[in-house]
Image 1 (cartoon, rainbow, N blue to C red):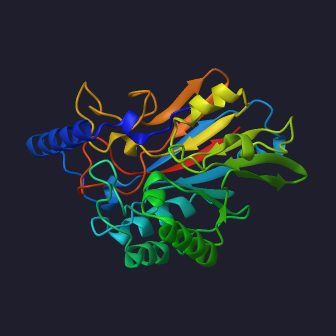
Image 2: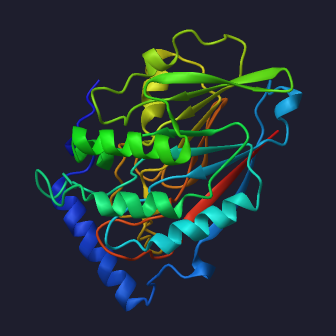
Amino acid sequence: MEKSMSKYLPRRKFISWSLRGLAAAVVGKGYYNTTPGELTLSRVDIRLPGLPAAFHGARIAHFTDLHASWIVDADLYRRAVALAMQERPDWVVLTGDFITGATKFLSDSVGSFDRQYLDNSIAALAGLQAPLGIYGVLGNHDFWSGPAAVAAITQAYSEALGVRWLRNSHVRLEKNGAAIELLGVDDYWETSSSLYDACKGLDEQSVRILLSHNPDINEEIDVLGKRIDLVLSGHTHGGQVVLPLAGQPVMPSKFGQKYRAGLVQDGARQTYVSRGIGHLLFPMRFNCPPEVAIIRLS
């Protein structure tokens, strides 16, 4: 199965989208800076058939696309933590693109890993905590920034926040004698991504929640014929710049607008795509405010 990013997001089209989105935001006065009123808390109720009674009402705080860089104010992360912690989540998930670093759709590598932005973001996230833990997967920008960046991200988050990384693996979450399975994969565009490995040894009867930075993982789920009940993703930024009627002119997804944002149903499987917290290329969002999502299970 081809996972080349260039297949889904031609460089010329991305540059065109960026310029058109910038023009639309300026003309339409749709500039979203990161003021408190523009960071949204989204409460999303999701029913999962077969969910053990002990997990009914469980809350998952979903953070994604932090994109730590010089254009993202670390105060945005602090406010995101405050919003999430007031909901008292049972566990926290982080679904990739912790940094911007390299941006390969514009050239082989635009930008580079700068440790100060990683450190600033982690310091701002210091208040994150949950009784069942914090779990993470990596995104395309994390991988594009190179092995040293990946090592720095995973080590720093583990040491500072106690993040458990799900790199093509799973963990069994237990509550009051009941359990569900939480899975995670490397970014879908990476050859290291393996849903097959993440599913090894799963309890056949348990509810399964998959963390994948890129929602296009749904294609692999169908190809492999694996049962996944819920996918939690980011990657698309909800469009970041969303034009009236047209949506986002070019999506970093082979499925067009389908997985741009929000809850998507694929048969019995559901996918929630968060708009994310940070931003990419320019400090702007248009018709698409940043978001912290609280997933409430029933």
